[in-house]
Length: 264
Ligand SMILES: NC(=O)c1ccc[n+]([C@@H]2O[C@H](COP(=O)([O-])OP(=O)(O)OC[C@H]3O[C@@H](n4cnc5c(N)ncnc54)[C@H](OP(=O)(O)O)[C@@H]3O)[C@@H](O)[C@H]2O)c1
Figure 1 (tube, rainbow, N blue to C red):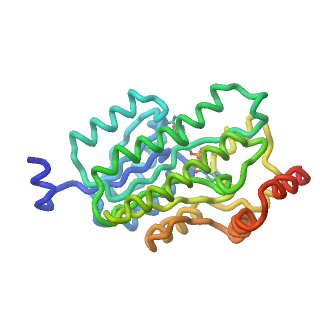
Figure 2 (tube, rainbow, N blue to C red; figure 1 turned 90 degrees about the vertical axis):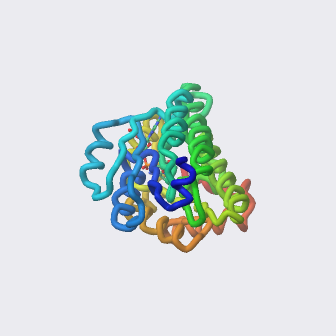
């Protein structure tokens, strides 16, 4: 019956944003609020309910606050069940939930490192998988990768590897979904001023040269939405990061890693 209603056009259009309680995810919700006129409901996902409620009050769209630890497989099952029950059309999925911790791999807690794999890779992959059956022509998937995806990063090794996964996965998925006209865009910013660094700098410090390239979340999101609108594969915010991306394409990574080592 629900499928019949979908076919008749009598269905709920939604946008799902993970990691919506702060930083880039919250900014996506705020900017999409002014743009996604045909979306009926925003589903906002993160662990901190108070922050999601606060965001929800700022939005004109109807929202559903989904308090969930995405690293918990049982809690991800709840999302699967919710999608099954509501049978919406997912017009937009933004996978923003993610964290990174700087420091030497062998000197940090293992759980903190594998946690990055659980959230940045496993949860992102599963949420994407769960949403695709509910997508239609012109649905958008926006995946938060990072410029850390472009080059291995000693001192940020696991995080950079998770983001290389996100970028590679997103580009391949984009090709797979092309026949269905579902657009996948990977967002690859350099450092962005958010709470990300409260966690990231627990053991290590951001390289001085990176600090020169900081941008604000609103710019990253504006450019990401524009890139997704233009059906682009990637959004690389700021000229410095575009230059970095170019170097990682044309120069041997071993050479670049030596230069990065000298900058420390
Ligand atoms: N900031 C940067 O410099 C930068 C640069 C490139 C890429 N990125 C990427 O951009 C994305 C967003 O980062 P941000 O800068 O906006 O950082 P942020 O402000 O720290 O936001 C991270 C979001 O992830 C959510 N989250 C963390 N653990 C979670 C869990 N277990 N389950 C559900 N949600 C969880 C957080 O909410 P709760 O704590 O409420 O759960 C929060 O909403 C991340 O994937 C990050 O890797 C960031």
